[in-house]
Image (cartoon, rainbow over all chains, first blue to last red):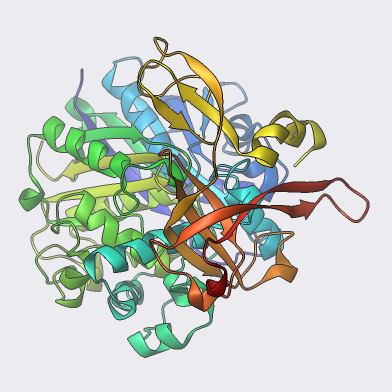
Length: 390
Length: 134
């Protein structure tokens, strides 16, 4: 298996992009990443696009071909383009497929992208499309919503470990604090614990400010074999691990409601593949679709003891400058969560950090970063580890 | 949900019928065709649950799922049945009285309707076992 490097990255603006279409945003991210890498079209061997629900959000399937076409990669050069779907982990999984293609030796230069256009439909329709990531026949039919499922995780976490609403709110406060320095972020306004707690209740105990928003956006990275990465860039970022795990699709079938076993398994596989431990990671982008999700994630990935995710957050250990900075990009909470794009955006953030290009969000001396992307309420987890050094 | 999609599991929804693996003695609701514990080696048979169970965790939904708008606030919960498996359902009760560990029993209720003239979905919801907790 060959070592793989990221040689180019690009995020579009994340937000309510009413003047842009699905294909507009993907092409912007793709072309941006390719020009960041200094690659020409003829060099591209394959493309993978993470997209959760084009069929419901923009009534468009056949996303792989659409994007190849509008990126100018279909005509004459006929670059193979594949759509990858794993709900909100679609982006992370597209990246993983791209890494497979390069690592296997089948392809050299590969684009991994992710995109979602969620604001072309009313928010009730968007919520309904998102609910398809849970078990529609046995959760959705009972009136379950995604905030509802995560609220049940939060309730259990509070009951078992004494986690408080204030600690949940502190996740949102920290991520908005980070996101205000991210030019692509949907929400750049700092918020307070008080404003989170006073925001309307969506699914008790989760307030609306505990939830990530509905967002449009796209992200892309360009992958290359590590051996030739220096032909394109002075600062290739190396892929040290790619791991994926599955769990039951319905929350009610889980061994422990407060632990995403798929995250634990993917994390363990990633640490083994990289030969690293949690203490070696300088920063991590985790899947904070809801504030409780970040608390579970840092526990499941070994950055906090089980049950102490709330306390660790409260103590500032996950802030920039803390023991393990979490979601320097602003996370899904402040940056926005265009579901298919998120997993790739997380990798773009880590690459910018490891290149030392993150501006006011920069983690001093960052060498090794991790991404953690979850589909549904934890049925899929994808974890990557990246390093400045090969 | 389309009529055929609902109809296929109608008996399971109406009567809390799930499955039991004779080989590993585990119970499943919703029903499973293959035992996730012993997989292809398993021996699956139908099993009707008593329906008694307790609340594992719950939430009070204020922003409803599509089609549930006139039910807010409603209590959504994960309920562990006495035989072992857990399921997601609603608890019909004053939201402020629901507690983790509360004992519940099943009731047959309307779940929803496919549009104004569409099929009415029925299924199992739960109420507190002790009536004064309603």
